[in-house]
Every structure is written in structure tokens, then in C-alpha cells.
Amino acid sequence: MKKLLIISAVVVCAAAVRADESAFQASLTPDIAVHPKTTQINGFAINVWGENPQHSFNLGFVNGSTGDSKGFSVGLVNYSESYTGVQWGIVNYSNGDFKGWQDGWVNISKGTFTGFQHGTVNVADKFSGFQLGWVNYSKNLSGGLQIGLANIALNNGWFDDMPDKFAKGFPIVNWSF
Image: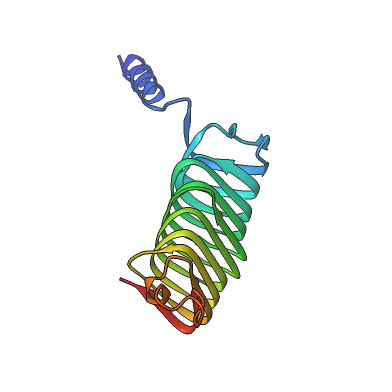
């Protein structure tokens, strides 16, 4: 009877764990890792260079995430397709939408960024939130504030009446609400 209960518990636990998810990942490259790069990591990943869909804490030199990922990434380089959470690194790059906080020397978001970017250079296609850096750039600043030495918002309506006198950038502070 005891053996039957133990076997049943093991079978139930094994059935509950999905083959495409894991709580831990360790990787040297995306193809040399404990789990394939298609496995979603829901927990912790330590990477020399890792790339998985994730809802996890990532620590490594290069942290990559695919799909709609969430978490906290700390590394030299962090990149993502779409991300919600925190990226701390020298370079942070999001190819899609980003919600949260990017902190690094260079922060780039190619989609809609909502949140806080802090770094030497901050770039966002569509930005809503707060950019703090030496150079802040947004193609479309909407509901946002830029503080830095050079602040550029291509859609800034403050300068539409005077295109020959002012540029789309402004030193120290720029905003759109």
C-alpha cells in the first residue's frame, strides 16, 4: 500500500510538471544549456549567454528572453522581444514593448516603453514615463518627462509653431502630457 501511494504521488507530480517549463536554467549559450531555448523558465536562470521565454530572475553576462517575458534581469547585456519587469545592465535592449525599469549605460526600446529609463543614452520609439540620462530620445513622447543634457522628442508639439527657431529637442528638461 505504501509503495502504491508513493508511486501515485510521483506520477501525479510528474504529470503536473510540463515538459516545456522549468524552474531553473543554466546555460553557456542558448544551444548549450540544461534546457532547450524553447523551454519557459519560471524561477531562476544563471547564464553566460541564455535565451528563453521566462518569468524569472536572470543573472549572467548575456540574458536574452523571447516571447512575452517577465522578470528581473541583471547582466552585462539584457535583450528581449517583449518584457515586463526590470533590466539592469550595461546595455538593455527590447525589440518590442517594455513595461518597467531599464537601468544601464545604453537603454533601447523599439516598441512602446512604459516606465523608467535611467542611463547615459535612453532611446524609445514610443515612450510614456520618465527618462533620466545624458541623452534621451523618443520618436513619440506621450505622457512622459525627459531630464538630461539633450532631450529629443520628435513629436513634441511645443515647437510646431516655430520650426525655424527651435528644434524638437530641449536641454535639461522636455515633456509631453
